[in-house]
Length: 375
Ligand SMILES: Nc1ncnc2c1ncn2[C@@H]1O[C@H](COP(=O)(O)OP(=O)(O)O)[C@@H](O)[C@H]1O
Ligand SMILES: [Mg+2]
Image (cartoon, rainbow, N blue to C red; front, top):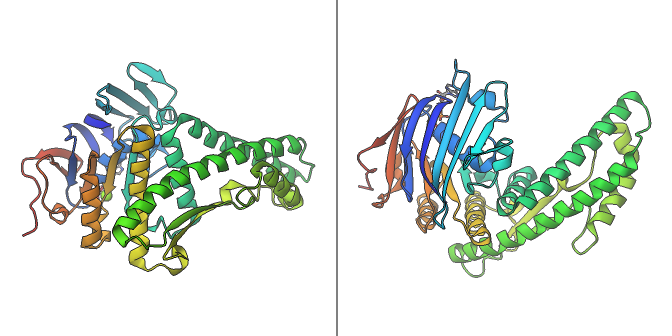
């Protein structure tokens, strides 16, 4: 996918912008708090279906204004043009129009512009809390197929309703009527979610393994495995989940929420045959986090047959020179990228296809000169 251009009105501190992008690297530069991340956030709305920084779009409307508007145009790898417009009015719902057709909102366009994002916090992906690895899996799965996205949402929906029922029963000290039916639904949707995550992890692990092999060496001892909190591999996940719910029933009634399920699962990552979370050095943890993101891009490219847009928000200051040059090398292998950095000179020699944009106080302008290479 290539984003050719964007028009922005009233998004964060960007009052107005109309930009044409390079199909290769796009470098966004400027001092801190000028609007670099704001620009990336606007672009990534169309991949994630929401902001990567906030749950409330109200926050993204320019101070003192009532609405924002963003229009994105470009083409798929097969050369099919797209044109998506998104408008949001404070306190209202987003209106999204793709190819002249209205969709219900941002949630409907998840995956339309496949994308991969690296932000500074992603450095903790490999060794940080499990929630990050679960979202990584779920987001990848959603980018691969709308059916995956639907399954993820269905599980979340059943879980939410079951929790509401338990919460009410606990508060009113009443029996949770109809819980059996919810258990059945939760077990079925939960098993499906685990199946999708395992399948997605297999794809990711294959590509991450190849990358680690190239970077660390053939004996890197790398592996990733899904750790289901209620069903060992090979066991019927729905039956195990039902069993776990049965055992947890009294506790759940007392506490008023669901205590087991795929919302507690994790991915175990091994390097040098040892769990990286416990035994990895800081440098290894960062490296593997990056590899996970690169594997995500490669998986989306190969399974969907569409190059994801890659967004890097100010990550190079977190990495040593060798790792950052590796990342850049991988990206120049054919992804369109958007790279924000207050110090573009750190990005090394720009290739001729690079466009540079300077951001100051929310004003984004194409810069004439590419960033200087190393002296
Ligand atoms: N809704 C908004 N309206 C106007 N300005 C905003 C809004 N949200 C954030 N900002 C401003 O955007 C700036 C931060 O922009 P950001 O893109 O995060 O900076 P950076 O260039 O460091 O990435 C801050 O000055 C902040 O006040
Ligand atoms: Mg920023």
